[in-house]
Structure formats: structure tokens, C-alpha cells
Length: 386
Ligand code: KG4
Ligand code: ZN
Image (tube, rainbow, N blue to C red):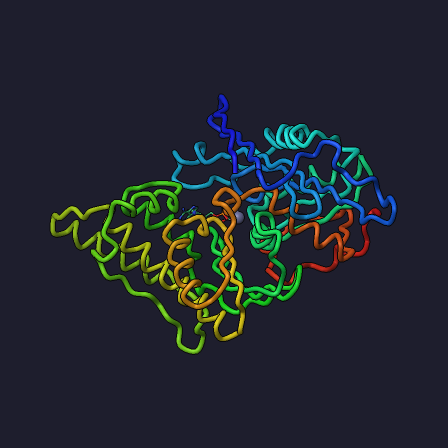
């Protein structure tokens, strides 16, 4: 992955991500349907569910022709977390530029696009609406089919981009700021949730603990970095197991244990080593995520395991999962870190398989902030403009 970064005047980071495994677009598009060849499907994908405005052009679900991310992290850092109104306003400012950059980078125009895809949930409603409105406007103006994508299905599909051999069925651990799910990907677009968090998501726990130990926002990457200097055995934190629900997670007890430790130390006038707390907390989270995922693969008989979502970029999680997969004869798939966090290429990958199945959304598509995984609102399907 080659990443070109630019900090813009307002602090927003503009990134163009090039996937070397993808070929350049020039002259490579199949002539539609010529000599019975399968038609290429070029998707313009848009993502704006949280604090990243992103647009990508993806060919046949797995080849990324461009991947543009405009990240607002710096803007929200002063507030200690994402401020929804600021996120929405920045999305409005940045979305057209991202779409144009993604087309320019792919050396294509809107007329070359076959499908417009967009994340329509879950996420912040005002943020989602910006991407949804842009996608609908393009689909309407250019008379292109429209495909709505579930954000988490996008994260899972990020695994298809760099692993051209990966096909369902496989197990996937999805760990982001809002989700901690153990999922069986039975087929493209067919998911069964076999475990999930009962309270905080893994990313949320990282963010809250980072704030408590003074690392600030965004918590996950900061704990990841600090933990490298710390002793993961300095403190022993509880790893919640839920009786009768062996694949479910619970991270709020762990978070409280960290907070209690900090408060007790403060009351005794002691200063805890930030790196030791970060490393010990991270170890507790990572061990439970890995042990649940490996157990699920063994019991359900899957020999392929993928990880997805922002927390999947965590160094310790990637290392331990790789080691345990190797020990258990499981093939381990993980996207590059920049494809684990929010991006639009993953939305294009997920949309391709939906499009191939005939899914079309009509122009009354709306943002659905709490859209459940695997149980998408079918009411939009089959009534498309095309
Ligand atoms: O998938 P994502 O970018 O957005 C959501 O869909 O939520 O995930 C964001 C979450 C945040 O909680 C962030 O702290 C966490 O992923 N995260 C990490 C790392 N990078 C991002 N957590 C642990 N280690 C990391 N390196
Ligand atoms: Zn996400």
C-alpha cells in the first residue's frame, strides 16, 4: 500500500491510497460484453458514516483503481471524540472533492461508472446522509444503478481486496468503534452472527481507557503505540466470559477494572506507568478476541479466519491471531491497516457482490443509523430506478 498524505488548511488529512496489487485503469476496461467476455463492473463507492469522508473506484469487487480518504481526526481531537455536527459539516465540504479525486485517480469520468454504491448505515445519521445524498444525486443525474451497503459488511469485504483467493465460507472477527461481532460469512452478503458484545465495543473500550490514562483521542492507535513500550504482565485485568454464550464479549467490566486501578493509585498518591497499563489492558482485550475467534473456527469447522474493522489494525491482535491461527492450522486473512479503518474501497467490494445478486436500491433510500447486520432492510430492494 502506498499512501500519499496532505494536511489541508483546516487540519483535515487528505489521503490517496494506492494498492500495488491492483493494476492501472488505462486501457484495461473490458469492452462491454465483447466476445462473450464477462462485463467489467466499475463501482464508484462513497463512505461517510463517521469522521472519514471517502470515495473509491473499484473494478469487479477486488481491484481498487482509486481510494481517497479525507480524515477529520485532527478536528475532533480537541473535543476528545467525534462531534456529530462538525463531522456532518465537514463531509458536506469534502465529499465532492473526494469523489472528483477518486475519478481523476482512476482516470475515469462519471460516464464510465456502472454502479454507484454508498454506506447507508449504521453510523451517525447526519454523516451518513451526506454520502447517501451525494450517491443518490449521481445515480439520478447519470441514470446509474444505486446499491446501499451495510458499513460492517464493507469492513468484512475489505478482506477481498488484497486476498483475491478468499471466498466464503469463512469466519470473521469484526472489531470497530461500534461493533464487536464474531460472524460466519456463509456466502457473499450472507452473514450469521455467532457472538457479539453485551456492552461496549472493543474500539470503544480502547477509546475510553486511552482517555482515562491520559492518552487522549483517538484511543486505539495511541494505546497500540504506548503498549509497545510497556509490560503486558504488569497488571492482571479480568477477561469476561459469559456463561452459556461462549462467543459473546463484554468489555465494560475490563474498562471499570482499569478505571478502578487508576483511581486507587491516585488516592494513594502513586503514578502508574501509562505504557504498562496500556499494554496490560490491550493484552486482556486481544486474548479474549483471539481465543473466541479460534474456538469458533475449531467448533464450526472453519479453516479460514478474517479480521475486520478499526481494531483489526491493532499490532498485538494481528500478531497473536497470526500465531494462534498457525498453531491451529487456520488460514489467517487481514486487510492492510489502512483498509481496516474506514474507507470507501471496502464499500465498493461489498457492493459488487450485492449488485451481482441483483440488489438495486431506489432513490428513496434513506440513512439507517442503527441498521442491523445480516438483516438489512429489504424494502429498498428490487424497486430501483434501473
Ligand atoms: O472501523 P473504524 O475505523 O470505525 C468504526 O466503524 O467504528 O473503527 C474505529 C475504532 C476506534 O475505536 C479506534 O480507536 C479503533 O478502531 N482503532 C484501534 C486501532 N486503530 C483504530 N484500536 C486498537 N488498535 C489500533 N491500532
Ligand atoms: Zn468502520
